[in-house]
Length: 216
Image 1 (spheres, rainbow, N blue to C red):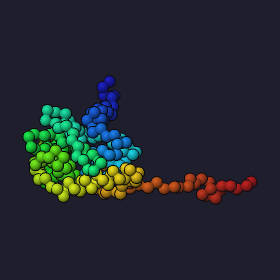
Image 2 (cartoon, one colour; image 1 turned 120 degrees about the horizontal axis):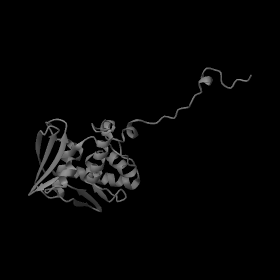
Image 3 (cartoon, rainbow, N blue to C red; image 1 turned 180 degrees about the vertical axis):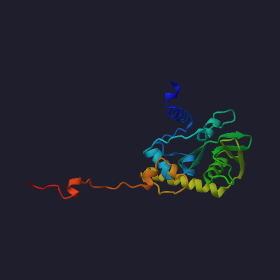
């Protein structure tokens, strides 16, 4: 019977399959190519994604929004920006004339854009050499909040600094420092950062009560 099926697992499997088709392909061995989304988020998470990755469970179509839009008519091709011998690779969701668009899912209407989205969009304006950038947040009930961003050189220089840091840490096989944020609680690597394993001795109940190792 249909009611006996585990529909939750079916939906989760479908989301995972779609996500894998849409996600940006990163060659973990190519540390001279750094992807923009790796440096606007937590560097430790990006490091683990390359060195010792762990699957993340996708929770809904909002997380797939950008990937879906990149496949449509106005979706852009990825572009590279040279930083000495490192290539910074970025891709926007939509490119129309001189305007760059990012689309993000949101649980409610926002008063301000998320900092990592601003960093991403600003960097894309330099990578694509475009003057205008717009972030559109869309909630589950189709409410939209739009923010227009001006290109900022100092903000892009911070992204470049983070690109160099991640590249150096990957070369040296050194784990980046923890960068606490609101994303930590939902990160697949949360336990690695905040929950240390303790070496505990297994105790025998009889021994604890004083009955162990007694001769007749």
